[in-house]
Every structure is written in structure tokens, then in C-alpha cells.
Image 1 (cartoon, rainbow, N blue to C red):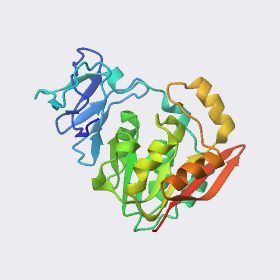
Image 2: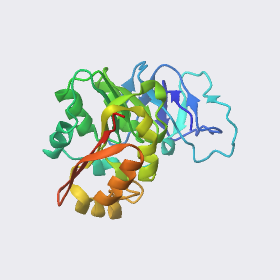
Image 3: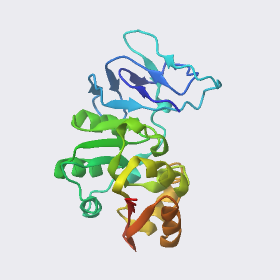
Image 4: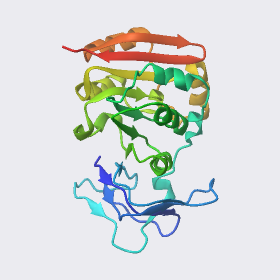
Length: 264
């Protein structure tokens, strides 16, 4: 999966652009039209917005990047970008602040957020001082909303397992909704281990806990593709990648695990 800068496009139905490669690059301005909004979201040139996209229609295995032709507007079919219902992330209760507090973020912290809700990032940006923040998400719409509001964060549409080294190391990593990641815990922690600073934290959370997750898995099967790890499994995998489990809470309405990267 390749990463490319995202600049200018309008999500629309006709005419569909035929992708032949998972990576693409467009021009310096783009707009979304989304049926739940009365107005388009117009994003002017944003150098801190990148995307790593996989086309389900691709039949080519080549590694040649494809650019959308230079025209006034580039049309991309809606289904390439809006294919999941992320409303299950909507939560604005006190557990968001509770999760953030475990990160102990200060003005020198380099923060990574994976699959966070808009509310979570709002609280994180609004209540914390940090050196840098990178937000990853599968939803281009959520990233667009965030990048329109904040100039002091970077957004990347791509998987946590392939985060570019140029943004590492990270002092705090929030895996806000781990069950949405289509990877084994070993793959996630294995990819994060070399990108975390010594003493850095990986925080796995669910603000409503395991019982609500079970309901979400039935209601949103395309989004919830795995479970939250139990303590024994988490400790075993964490130790294999030089993490210590410093905190573990598996309460009826709250789940949180704090892993700390070994300093040796």
C-alpha cells in the first residue's frame, strides 16, 4: 500500500474513475459532498494531509503510481472513500478524558492516534499541549473534518502497521478502537515497537467496554473485525515486543490497557 498526498477532488457518483493502482495523487484543493451534510467541506491546500488507499477494483499488481489527469475537477466514485458506518465511534462521555489522562502528554510529546473518534481528537487537541500529533483513520471523511479544524496535527489515511518512519518515534500511541484494525495483536505491537521511544506508551482502549463492543460487533460487522485482548494474551504478546503492561482495566463499561516500551 503506497502513501500519497491528497489534494483536490470531489466525491461524486458519475463518472467513475478507473483505478489501476492503490496509490494516487491529485491537485492542491479538494471538496467532499456527503449526504449527511448540507454543505460541502472545502479543504484548501493542506500539506499535512496524506492518504494511503487500496482500490478494490484494481486488477493490476504493478507498482507504478497513477496520477489523476490535470483537469478542473477530478471525480472519484463515492464507494472508494465512504464504505463504512463509523457512527459506532460516537461517544462524548467522561471516559474520553479518562483515557487521555493515562497518556501523560506534555509539550514534548509526539502523539499517534489510531482510529480515534472526532470527539476524542477534539478533546486531545483542546486539552493537551504536545510537540506533534499524527492521526490515522480509515475514514477519509473523519480525517477531512479534523484537518479542516486543526492546523497543528497531521492526518494520514493508512494502516497503523505501515506508518512511515519519518513520523517516528512516538511517545504516546492511542489505539482508540483496536477491534476495527484488521490485524493480529502481534502485528500491531510488532510494527509499533521500533517506532515507540524508550519509555513510550501504547494505550489500548474502548470507552464503553467489552459488553458494548459485543453489541457493536453484531450491528457493525464491517467495522468491528476483532476483539479486545484479555490480560493474559496481552501480557504474552507485549513481552514478546519489549512492552510491559503497566495498567489493565476490563470493567463492564470501560476497557483500558497501558503498555510501556522497555528502555533497554
